[in-house]
Every structure is written in C-alpha cells, then in structure tokens.
Amino acid sequence: MFAQYFASFFLVTSAQNWKTYLLDIDLFFLSLSSVLIAASGYIINDYYDVKIDYINKPDRVVVGKVIKRRVVMAAHTIINFCGIGIGYLVSPIFAFINFGSAMLLWLYSNQLKRLVLVGNLAVSVLAGLSIYVVELLYQSHNPLLFIYASFALGYTVIREVVKDVEDVQGDEAFGCKTLPIVYGVRKTKVFLFLFIILFGASLSYLLFNIASPFGLILMTGNIVLLTTLTIVLYQADTKKEFHRLSTVTKIMMMLGILSMIFI
Image (tube, rainbow, N blue to C red; front, side, top):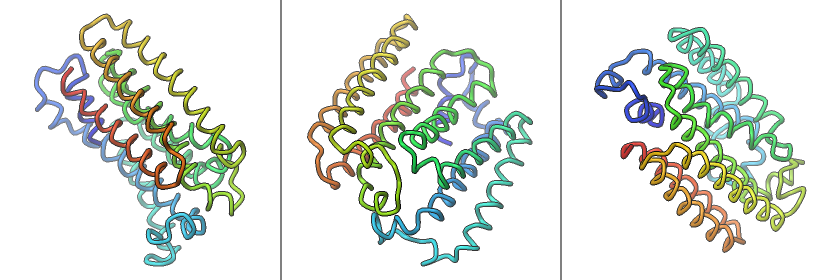
C-alpha cells in the first residue's frame, strides 16, 4: 500500500498536488484490494506450510494451533472475494489482475514454491506488479514506474532465494525442490552472485538511459546497495547469517521505496 501511494505521489508525472492522490478513491480501493490479496496469500501459505513451519519456525505457527484450519480457509476465501470485488470497483481489469494474483498465490503455496525457482519468480513478478498497477491506473508513462517495478521484482527474487536457504531444513523434510536443496548452498550463492550482477547491470542501464540527474543518483544508490548485499552474502554461511541477509534485503527494499521522495 505504501509503495503504491509513494509511486502515485512522487512518480506520476501529472501530479500537481499530492492531496489529489491522497483523496483519490480509486487509488484507495486499488491499494486496499492489493493488501487484501496479499493477506490472503500469506494466509494460504501458512495453511499449506504448517508442518514445515513446525521445523523452521515452531514459535510462529498459528494455523491449527491458535486458529482452526477450517477458519483459516474460510478467511482466505472471504478476503480473496473482497479483494477481487474492491478491485472491480476501480475497473474490471483490476478485478482480473487481483483474481490472477490470488490464483497464482494459491498455486505458489500449493505447488510452485516446491519447484526450483518457479515459486521465487512467481512471487517476484507479483511484487513488481504491485507497483506497476499504478501506471495502469493513471497512465502517466513515467519510465521510473517501470524501473521501480523492476527494482521490486529483482530484490524479491534475491530475498526469496535467501529465505529458501534459511528454511532448507524444513523444506527438505517435506520434499520441496528449492534451489539450495537441489544444488546446494554454495551453488545457490553463486546463482545469487550472478543474478545480482545481471540485475544490477540491467537496472543501471535502464537508469542511465533516463538521462536525468535523478536517474544517475538512483543508479549510484542501486550499485551501492547491491555491493553491500554482495558483501553480506559472501560472508553468510549459517542459518542465522542468512536470516540477517533476508533482513538486509527488506531494509534495501524499504530504502528503495523511500527514495521515491527525492525524485
């Protein structure tokens, strides 16, 4: 929600007054529907992962322990319908996007997250889409919206793979085929190094071609962030260190959102 509002306030080229967007009911409904679809995704993920979570994070298990499983499924269904319905109030296209996102999140929890990279990419695409829908709403044609959507996608790929390394014990016990389980932690780190280089180079190229001072500043900041991430990744070996790396990626994504203020 915050990313969508920040994108509207600071990236939409037609913005004359941020209050116009703060009071825009379509933006409010769009953001609310996105939050609901994401919430239902977390719910269904916890539902399917309850046995794995008893190994990876037993102190955080809620499904079947605090809330009954049938209540969880009912909540998931109701929240999804609300998210799709609210999206329809903005436009049928957003109802369709929300429906597709809800289906993809269900497939992710049920099957895709157990496949090498497929689940990681599915969640990452949805992360980028959550920002790009602002462009679909306002048709601002600001290339920075695409840049930030790519930023969200790339950092989410990194974070999702890091989480797979962190959760390898529980995932392996229940037959998941994640990158670190199939190829090992060392090769997973090599993949992350190569992805960071490719992602950093691609994003820097896009930013450089914007040909504006803001594009160069963002390019420099992105290089600094990715260099920091590479150093932390190189040093990470234990579950605790990979958990710290996951936290670092969250902080970097937050910094990326906050950087919209300065554009």
